[in-house]
Length: 171
Image (cartoon, rainbow, N blue to C red; front, side, top):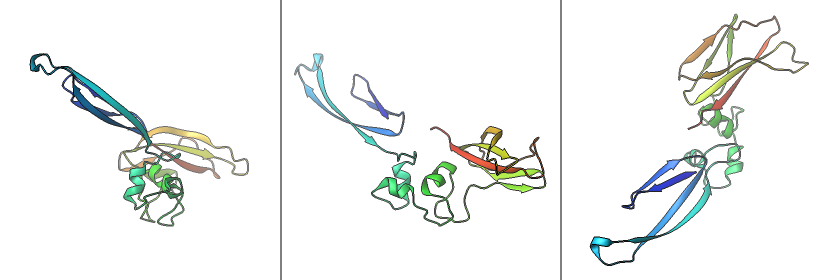
């Protein structure tokens, strides 16, 4: 939500507060012609416009990719055919037009590595037995740094699998 504040001179300040925008239209009507004692009447209308999809992808981000309508459907497309939908690319801050840029984690010996974005928080989950399908948290709230993040987990087993989860930081 864009919140609007106005001082007595009519100077308007906008503040981003969520995934909605407020459009403020105002009309100043002079009530008293005396320039030393001028009073104004403000007529205002606020219109709420949804600016994100249900998955949280900003419409402006989708518009930058060339979409102009049916935002929910656009959110579910995979422009670069890398297996990640537009909303997933937005969430992980990867490039939806580059099939080599997607969320992934690499393992070398016991070391885990992944490319991070300063726009994201990450968590790593592990599973010792995929047939059970229970994923435990290895670590979470890793703040991305636009660098490769590397760590050696304290927990490991010969059949351990890892899952990297990205979450977009709040603005």
